[in-house]
Image (cartoon, rainbow, N blue to C red; front, side):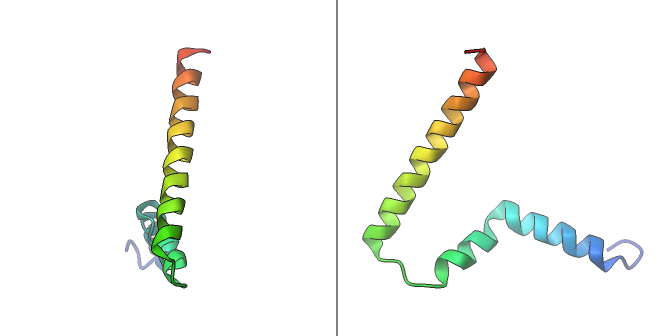
Length: 63
């Protein structure tokens, strides 16, 4: 914390937590998620990630 600037320190902490997925994890853990639902969610997330990476790759290559 520089110069006792609490707002700046809080902003930096929130940014780090966001990057690490802490807020998302807290939201997911609020309610119980059945193992089958968890697998389906994780699979859908993986598909979204793969599509996004492919889009970005094609964009970089100029297609």
